[in-house]
Every structure is written in C-alpha cells, then in structure tokens.
Length: 263
Ligand code: MLT
Image (cartoon, rainbow, N blue to C red; front, side):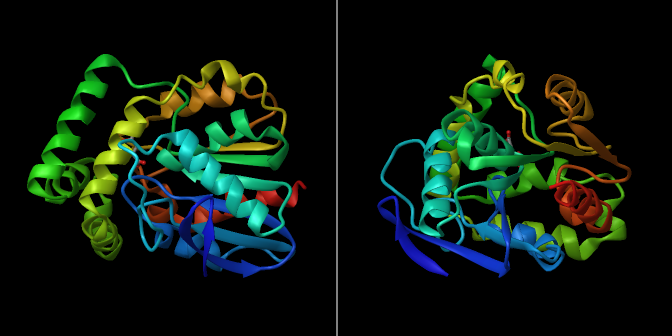
C-alpha cells in the first residue's frame, strides 16, 4: 500500500487484524526483510511492514542526512494514518535505533518493543569516520562498495553454505537500494545519540533478540540493553548472525509470538 504521509509517499504491507506490530527494517534493506515474520503474525494481530524513506518503494527526501528521528517521525505518522494509537515496534539493527528514537519521541505510541540485532550505544569516533568515508564512496562509486563490505559480516559463518538463498536474497535487497539513500542513512546513523540513558525509562514489554554470531551488533550489546530494560526478555539465537530473522526465522518468530501472547 502507498500514501502520502509526513510529506512523502511511503509504502507498506499489512497482514491480519487486531493489535498492531510495526516492523522497521535495517540498513540498507527494505520491508521485504520481514516476509517470514509477516507470514507468521499471530491471530489477533495486525502486522505492518514499512519501507523507510528512500528505501524500497518509499520516496526519499532532499535532506542531507536521514536521521533516526526523521525515520521515527515517518513511522509515527504512518501509525497515525492507520489510526493506530499504540503498537509493538519491532526493529532490526538500524530499525532498532529507530524504535528507540520512537520510544524517546512518541512514548505513548510504543506499547512494546522488539530490539533485534541492534544496540543502544552511539557510534564511536572511528565508526563515524568510517561511515562518512563510506557515504562518500557510495556516492562516487555506487552501492556495490556497501554490498560487498556488508556481505562479509552480515551472516553467521555457516549461513551462506546452509542457506545460500537467504544470502542471495539479502544481497538482492542491498543491491536494489539507492546510493543516495544509503549515503544519507549512513550519515544519519553517524549522528544518532546514545540511547543508553533512555533504557531505564522503558516500562513496556520488551524482547531483545540477537544472533549468537552477530558480528555487527554483538551479544554484549544485546545483554547491555536487556540488563537495563526492566522486565525485558532476551533471546540469543544459535548459528545466526546479524539478520537473525532470516537466518533462523522459526526461533525468531517463536520469540515474537511469546512476547505478543503476553499482551
Ligand atoms: C543495519 O543492519 O541496520 C546496520 O548494519 C546498522 C549499522 O550499521 O549500525
């Protein structure tokens, strides 16, 4: 589906009816990331998977950076468009940074959180520099440079052998991303704030998920969030990396189902 929301055309998929779970994809993916989860949305729940601005079928904007706050504003505006006052927000990696921005900016809209393969901390100086350089290279050379570097670290070592279709699917999503959106999201991630102090204010049901072999946002980061968020649950998925929802969909979906059943 598509509509003009918060000043630009945004695209999303919907399934089921009832309480809402909103899925926010990571970088540099699109809403197709969630195809397994959308198929498994339990009865009594409505799944909404959106394309973030500039990704998939959602229009971009001229802003030099796509900040996590901008993405959060778009997501909140989509929920308002759908007449949803409160939703469970499920974000993977950059989607998790956005979920935490939503929690900060729209706490009354966040009824629950699923923070998958993500972290609350901000970038360090070196990481910021790397993102700035990568953003320049993407604009000069195209997105192949990001696709190649991400393919090295996205998966558990076994995944490309045991699930070659998953690896190719992820490569396809990244190859389809627009270089200017990749660059703007990189610059936006580089300036995201440290969300650690906010974790103590979270009082909604929260599930932290991490692939045991995530090389981008590791288990230590997940444990830090789970310790700081009162009453949260943590699921560490064996033999899964940074895209644990695709590498181990059954375990991921079962953990989501358990959280949703607690409402
Ligand atoms: C993502 O998967 O969204 C990114 O790897 C997050 C990041 O680069 O920090």
